[in-house]
Image 1 (cartoon, protein in one colour):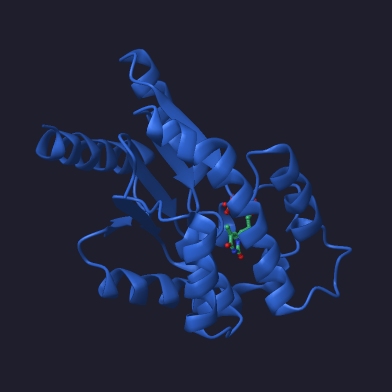
Image 2 (cartoon, helix red, strand yellow):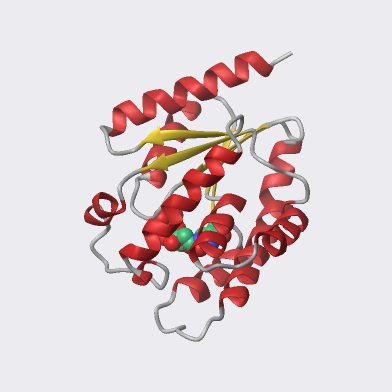
Amino acid sequence: MAGQGWFFSFEGIDGVGKTTLIKKLMDFFKEKNYPAVYVREPGGTLISEKIRELLLDIKNTGILPKTEYLLYAAARMQLVQEIIMPSLEQGHMVLADRYTDSSLAYQGYGRGIEREFLNNINDHCSMGFSPQLTFLLDMDPEEAYKRKKEEGPDRVEQMGLEFQKKVREGYLDLAAQNPERIIVINAGGELTEVEAQVKSCIIKYIKRHSA
Ligand code: TYD
């Protein structure tokens, strides 16, 4: 369900280039005067950005797995109510840099929190707004690690390569369980290729589902 608008999310382990890709897509839709809104998780509203600081600060070593999840969920709920829901209701396109699948992959497969607990709360927080398509940028975690930014790892990235491997496997599992919605994109290639592939999927989807 996505109101009157289009809702597409982007997922993947750390360092696969999601944010760079979405920025390119935003430029493309802006050029075409197509109303598109970029949101990132955790973040995107005043409160959600404050929660983001708390979650990514390497000093916060004592966060328990379920507390961590509830904080991501709280940030998401605020974002859905303040930005995602109104944008979709106005018929805009929302491009989400992470959404509920991140919680299933990181907190579920990565940290071992049971799926039922995550699904229940995810359902509440997303208020029924789920992406029509999700692009899973898939890449070998070692390759992704090499691409990482210079400022050093945040609290999640500090979990290391083994954790990223579990998260990647989790994402691939989720894609196998949701073949209609989740499109796996090989993010190891050139950005221009990845961009062209994603753009073409979005345009085709919109054409096919427009009245
Ligand atoms: P961020 O710097 O935005 O990472 P990226 O640029 O790779 O998206 O940090 C977000 C981190 O939070 C990232 O490591 C994934 C993690 N995360 C979760 O563990 N669970 C969630 O539900 C979400 C939304 C993010």
